[in-house]
Amino acid sequence: MPFIPHTESEIKEMLDAIGVDGIEDLFDEIPKHLRCGDLQVVPPALTEMDIARLMAARARQDGQPCCFIGAGAYDHHIPAAVWQIATRGEFYSAYTPYQAEASQGTLQLLYEFQSMMTALTAMDVSNASLYDGGSALAEAVLMAVRANRKSKSNRILVPRSLHPAYRRVVRNITHNQGVELVELPFDPQGGHTDLGALEPYSGQDIAALVIPQPNFFGVLEEASELCNWARDNGALSIAVVNPVAMSVLAPPGEWGEQGVDICCGEGQPLGAPLSSGGPYFGFLCCRKSLVRQMPGRIIGRTLDSEGSLGFTLTLQAREQHIRRSKATSNICTNQGLMVTAATIFLALLGSEGLSRVAAACHRNTDQLTGLLCRLPGVSPVFGRPFFHERVLTLPINVKDALRALAAHNILGGFDLSSDYPELGNALLVCATEKRTPEEMNAYVEKLERIISLQGGAPCQLKPEGW
Picture (cartoon, rainbow, N blue to C red):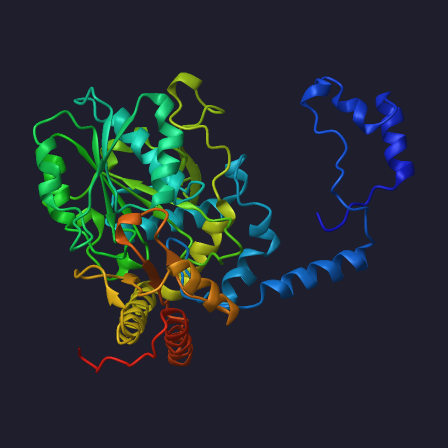
């Protein structure tokens, strides 16, 4: 909180009214061995002016680097109107409708969000968001296990080309619930999940197949073929999608012969700033037949007793509202403020504006990687169509290259060596619609010099169209 109004005398008056000597006495039920003790490394309190000066100095240390990272968090342009509206009091402090019918404006906004997400994904139903993309996938996996009553195995096929953080989150949330995650390899030439990798599981008891589109490498998967395989083998299909990409790619509801069963993803590209890692929000859509297994809340539109339009909570499958044994999730707050921003963002851009953003992102990534691949020793790792980002291999250590680029205020991409060591000196790069030709040329020039210095040989650009 920016302002705490209680004086020392007021605090003492409140403690006297309660009948305790100090604030610590309010926590006397916590055993001493569980307490952290004195906070030795926490500096003494500062005045408001000194705090403002210190935090401004810390913010300046971060600088304003040019970001080419991507990897699940994207530096998109956010129109000024988005957060100007989202931070109005009507939205800013009323985005979680616990007494929902008393907050018609919030309910209408969430209803509009659900309508936009079902239109974007071509699915029947959308909920009003989850914590983030990783936990949304975990909830989708648990939802699939509950919904696929024909399967007794609780086995989920998860491509290794899925975001590594998502895989870790899903494993952490589901491993104590009897869910078995089976990893599928990616094709070393294409970077996608080849149907041949699914052959060993044909005819087996599989609860669900996860299908990322695009995958973590930016590679486009054979989504329709994977979706059809899941249906033919009695498994539910779970799409993990980038919402911006869905404005130009086939939506999950139209994949294969019947579309996917569940669709989820990260909503950060829809108006949420990077903000040092959050907060973000996850989205989750599904077929209407699976709606009873969906976590979170769903807003419906209806008419009141006088025939006027109204909005209401249609479904709340949380343990606060129904029997705990029947609850599908214990999510206590949906990242509603982020959803508010996303709804405003989508309303401002519309379908045409969002598709223009997607086209500009693809064009910039294609242009940037084309320029980078003219440097000696730099080449694309995978040869399939891509969106938003691409994997390149460098002739020098990626970690060293990124450190040198950061010294020039350039965040040059995501180092894949920890999660995918088999790819060698591999770098995931992304260029959103915000990146200018001047910024991309500066990146290429700096990397050219870094390769020359660290590689020990002068750079000679490859000819165009090599």
